Length: 624
Image (cartoon, rainbow, N blue to C red; front, side, top):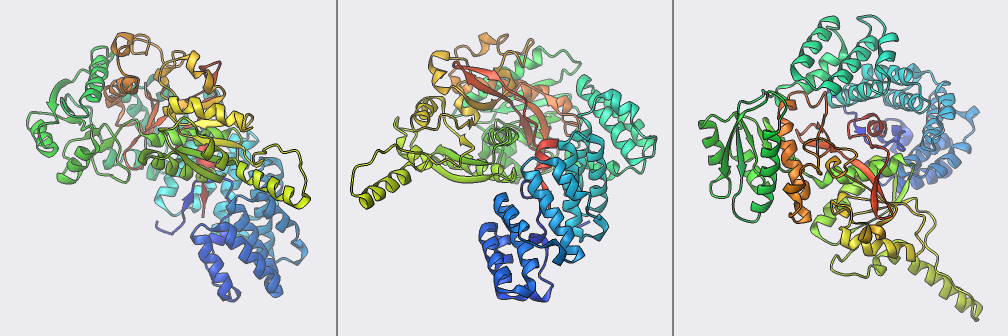
């Protein structure tokens, strides 16, 4: 199961046959063709497209093949218009059967990138998938699944995904595709899943039955009842593909977890993280004392500031701990992960990218989730071309990387990226650079010299922007947003990371944030997270805290409440204070946030954003 296909997270770049096709044909050994292929592999799609286009003009005997490759490269570069112009120039009557199929597949990608699912389906219905090469078959079925989803044909979309599942030959791709099947079926009401379910052992019927089981588990969240129901499902569908991919992955030894009866809490009582640790501990113990379930483990506290984390971990085990919560600092987490075998699970209260180890779970308020949600929300709102504005700091550069990575995964285009000095109040220079206002003035001065007379001048910002992705503190954003309006970006929507919100409504100051959309933890919104652990109910816990610590109280609450759900959280996400919690392939707890828009200085809840494993995000994936 190791054929080298790669699922790329970007929908608008669905046709990747040129990337995956090795130059086995004689004409592809032309030096320029090899160079173009190399450019494609390095992600320089526009340059590759231009080179393929030049080859199409200079090599008339192979014009059709190079034109198709050029059009496919334009699709990958995000330039659907250029791709369609080139596709329209190709005479279908001059194509071979294989080339004709590729042309129709190409048109389907173009139509899908424009949201025209009906036209895409018309093209896809002309294709016989068995006539396609393996890489094109993968693209065909994923395109078919997405087109059906856009037209509301959920079961047809799932059927296409099932066909895709049968030809995938890479474990991770199979698991991701199967997750999409489950999330797609989750859109259907339970009654529909019952009435339209084919009997066992039908594959579609098995998926529908499993989807209904997971839907029920989300509402009652009882781990024991869920496992009993899952065992019954396995007996009904013993040969179902989910047993060898989705379920096997979710219940692998890497994620094996038994509910503990004794917990060690490793937090510093002194040093730079002491205040943050105290807030997390308050949240943890509050959730512990207010727990309505039968989960009441013993808790032992350890001061991680005075003992090496490896020694502290071993001491906790010797004293009976079955789960360690902490460390809080990344240095201590890395020291622990690299310094010893983790014989009991660790729930670290932070995240270190690319660190994965058996029995290590990572859970924190990572900026990765905020960047992911901002880009997903902007993409769901239909935007394609964005600008990025982030702080000129180490953290700002990291967030810029996240925003860039996740926006490219949606298939969108980044027109320009700028940074700003957080210590200043005047952000006019980076904003003008971002909006190309200096270029506007250059054109004016040049025209004035040519005409040798005074002409009326009004600065004009660039007109190709769909949206702006912003990372800024509330203080900086209160200056940035008015300056964006001043420079004529009033109608350009702004999507921000969570740090834009102080955590508490402040309409007199946040009026300057009007119309900015951001995504943050549910606990901050009274209408979203209610009950005894809501923000309002715990006012006495946070009202005197510095604003930067408020969210840590919610992290502490979830770090206790999530424990009974870790065993099956990949199947049944847990709705917590910090988000809808799931887990990824590195055992990092991921958070689906709640999105809001500043209206009259008050955050107003917007449509929900799907999490990173759900249908919307994975539809933006593609098979190469």
